[in-house]
Length: 381
Image 1 (cartoon, rainbow, N blue to C red):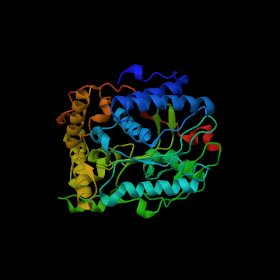
Image 2: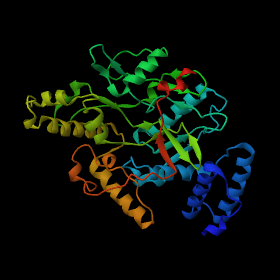
Image 3: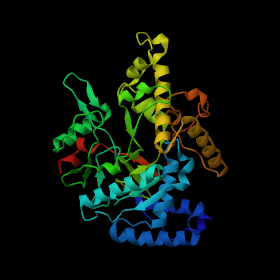
Image 4: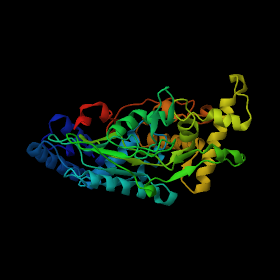
């Protein structure tokens, strides 16, 4: 494809420029014939002139979303970007029906769960328009545990969600006060009051953590939800912004064992694991944290395998990432990556990404964080 073949009257403005860039990219990668891309530029010119926005085709949405994942520097699992499934939910709840949005989000979780064989799945809801921002959820992930802040500054549950938990409680939700209360989904159309919905149990599969060599491990009562579904990122695609585009994948074992259950500002379970192992926790020189971290991560991997739930280890994940990087270079593309996000939280120096260096280049299309809505004017309705 040559640039001269995409030369109808150029689109104007940032939206138009990003729209044409997306079409050029789709044509260059073989997803769209050059002549069809040129025709689409003209169609979008007319639609933008008439309405101030435009509607992307299903093919543009599918391939553009896959490229957005490929461009995101935070994910170590991008080797599989071509396998991402995309659900077109742009018409769901477009009349402002939060209940319809909730049902579609529950369907997303059930489809992604897939009986334990977790699917790479993205659901894309209505984009923001010049006259109306799109809908969003307050939750950083569709499935998260509540965090209850005590008067003494300690927490029950996940400290990372404490602010969200307090915001949801102000809306009228009441949890049971356990370590693993599943937060409701809070759905909001900007300009309207937020509504919360409890997730049904079958949409929240969980894995209880045990250890292959330590029977006492089960008595710790540890668990985690089966797969992550990121829901606070806006999909920036061809000049349009989709503020509700939840993305599900499978976990890497270190995300749970070496971060969620281990970090001192999360569940902080390493002291309990170390005590169970009979380790001396009175001084750092015994390396009790390191030993407990390894066994907790091993327990997570074992437990997911035993439950038949998709999960990968960090060695496999980083080897696949290097293969992805090499494949991208053969295709004439760079590989945007944030080194601190790609290197695993444990045994980083034993993985092939340790000695590599990456530039977290910001290119479009992509996924971007959004401000928390309960701390902005959106939450006021």
